Image (cartoon, rainbow, N blue to C red):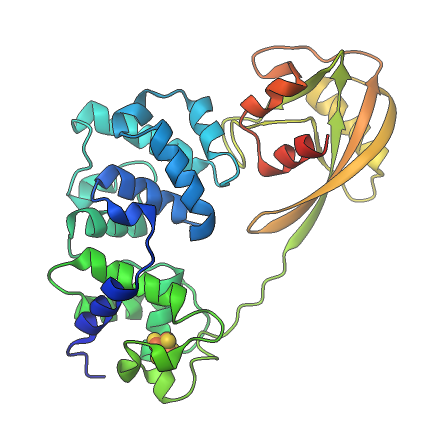
Length: 346
Ligand code: SF4
């Protein structure tokens, strides 16, 4: 494939057609970093409001570093993958302590900060400082696989060949625009389904287009979402509701939720509630009343939360991680989206 002018054609198209997004009007490395972290695993349309709210609450790396973690998790609530928010916070504190509050330009140093893998390092440093670093995300992978007519599914096994290609076409200057142009092309033109090849600024370089294979490259991945049923116990006392904090490690760490858990094979809902309340809180229910169910999707599985009001024989203990909270105050606690949906329905 002749690649002369590839990056020029692509970047010129980007500068003319790029979407007007709030993080594109800044060169502030902190703001670019926040947007890049939010955009991982989350759509642009969802990120816009979160980004604007975040920047209002934490306009600088100093504001982020000195904020308490619950405030950070509350601001992040609904975006999912809460480790991203915790890593932003931890990295902000390191930047204040060791780097005068600025993001270092050296990729080796950046990689030592929490939350900086190869993709984030390349995207933040190329966009903020125009450093000549390649990046591969899902959009770039799909675009490059089509340009090169690579066979197979879009997974990291393709990245060696893709990176070789990117190193050939990466311009010496304005790398940030070039990297964003590739991602924007994937989002707007070289879409997952029905790519718009006729209006594509790089169609003359594209082997998949030439061979008429753009609809079958990459080959589709089979994805079956695992389904989990869980029971949730609503414990109420004089208008207050019982919530507990999840452990600091693992899925949804440090978030608050109602008691309950996964229904084991062969268990009835009632049996699962009795077991969970005993295991988690050492309490025994007197009666149950089914209220409603809530469905929530995670990347790897979907969960059906079956919500029951429970009357108790004995009360759970309150401490720093187990609290009775007035209904109007529940929204102040950072919670997983499934629990937030339950509060809405309550
Ligand atoms: S020509 Fe079609 S398949 Fe090739 S990069 Fe452009 S949109 Fe994608």
